[in-house]
View 1 (cartoon, rainbow, N blue to C red):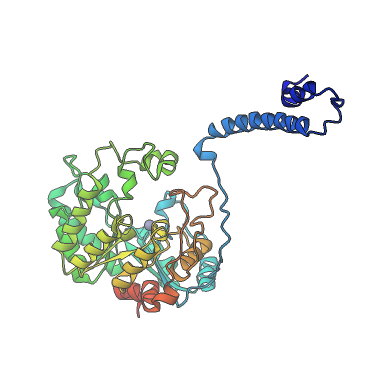
View 2: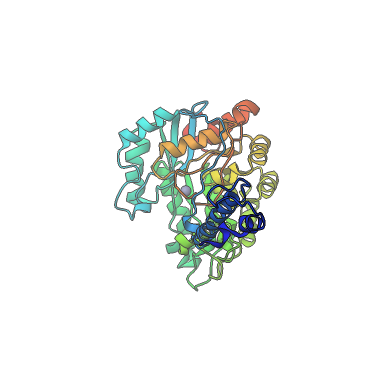
Length: 406
Ligand SMILES: [Zn+2]
């Protein structure tokens, strides 16, 4: 006999002389008691389920949005575009495989998305630069602009000769046909001189390199620092915790690396010290988390532009501030997909972000968004400011990378 079945009904029934048999129960109390029993059981199983869910690791949590909102698919850019930051070379694949293994397929993808030209930042130097130029710029004039690198590590091993050596290497790159100079983030984060001291971007010993780039009319695309969260402790407060757990080598906290603020000061000093050289600071000058800071940097230096690459997720979680930045600095903000070989879906997500007013859409096809668990909203530039959109898509790139032509 289950106690819940009888407590209320039994009390009343036993007090009445003409109590009906328990199976009839005209009072309804018995039914209520039975429902109460089921409810208790349901409560217990709900508590067990809740306990199980409480133990689900965050990494397995995959909520599906219940929002029903309009979705626009943008197949082609609103105007002919230039992807001003991409990687088509060999060195990021251990020098063994091309990032875009099939150039015909790459051109077809560019045509399908309305991308006229791609800036390839993987030129390196010497034979590798020649191979990049042969494969892209020379084989398909107008469609590619390859930037060269200089061997900073080798030059800095002998600091006294570094300037002259770097200038000679840059001149060789320019003579070969490089469209600009790419400088990677290892300058500031990990590069050391012959004495073992870390070298920051504003190091005086590199000044001849930047001056010569300006004289040669070569833009310098410089990647300084990294997302702010990479400099923070990898703990439960870090907004990119899952990404840093997946890539522990990206975490900079406690490694002795300079702070984010220190690196940004070095970028500010570098650009300020070489006003005759045009710099393009990659990834919104690593200031996508603070667009006011990015805007102030652009205000301070007319010889500075920024590219948007790698920061789709950051822009889309502050679409109004992002649109304001693109409008305020139109002509000095370059779109680049940084999609490592030209990923058509990623490129189209960029178009959706820049052009539409779509709200709350995934910035990545990954089941768990890789840079943080949020969705993005469009900047709506197609309606709000078509001029700023055109500048970001192509005008700025053509102005800052003269080799692209106009
Ligand atoms: Zn890149």
